[in-house]
Length: 302
Image (cartoon, rainbow, N blue to C red; front, top):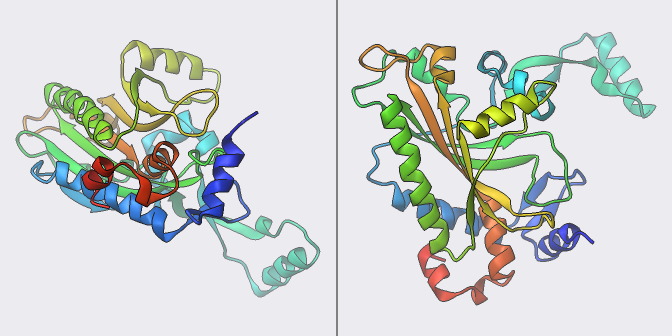
C-alpha cells in the first residue's frame, strides 16, 4: 500500500502543510517555513562568493515569452495560464447565473498575457538577450520563484505550486560545462551535509507527444540532465530534489543571447526543489525538529 497519504496526513496533523482541498496545493506552516528558510540560508552561505546576480521572480511570467521558449512544444500537459473576466455587464450576469446553477463560470473568462512560471529560469533568458552580449567570462544568475506544473498528486513531494532556487550559467560551452560539473559535486556535498541519503543519476524530462520518446532518449544519450535523488514518499522510488541541466545552445539561439566574442551563448542550470528538500528532511529526520541530529541542526542554523 502507498505510504503517500499517511506521510501527507502526518504533515497536515503536525501543521507543516495545510490542505486547500486541491491535490498538490498547500498552505505552509511556520515550522515548515523555518526549514525552507534555513536551507535557503545554507545555500546562500555556499554561494556568497560566486558573484551571481540575484533576481526573484513572481509565479507568473509573460505568456509570449513562454510560447517563444518552446515549453509548450515539449510540456503542454504541465503548463498553466492566467485567465480573467473581461466581459460586459450582461456577461457578468451570465457568469453569476452559471455560479448559482453550479455551471462552468470559467467559460466567461479570457486568457491574459500572463502564464504561470513552469521553471525559475524561464524569465531570465529574455532579460539576458535584452541586455546585449554577455560580459567577458559569461554570467551567473541566482534566481528564485514559485513555479507551477499541472500534475495533481497525493504525493506531497509533487506539488502543483512549489519553490525552486536556481543558478543559471551563460557563456561558452567550456564555461557552462565546468559550471555543471562543479555543481554536481557541490550539490552532492551540500545534501550530504544535512544528513540525507542520496543518489545522482542520469535523467530525462517528461516530454509530451509522439516525439517525446525520441526526445527523452536523446536527452539521456547526450547526458543533458542529471538529478540528485532522495527517497521521500513515492513507494516506487526516490524523488529528485536537485537537477543539473545542460541546455546547449537552445536558449541562446531562441533568444539571441551571445557571448562577448559574438558566438551563440550556451546555458546550464542547477535547481534546488526547496519544498522537496524540506519534505526530505522531515521524512528522514522526523517531524520533531528538536529531535533532529545536532550536526544537521547546526549546519542548517536551526
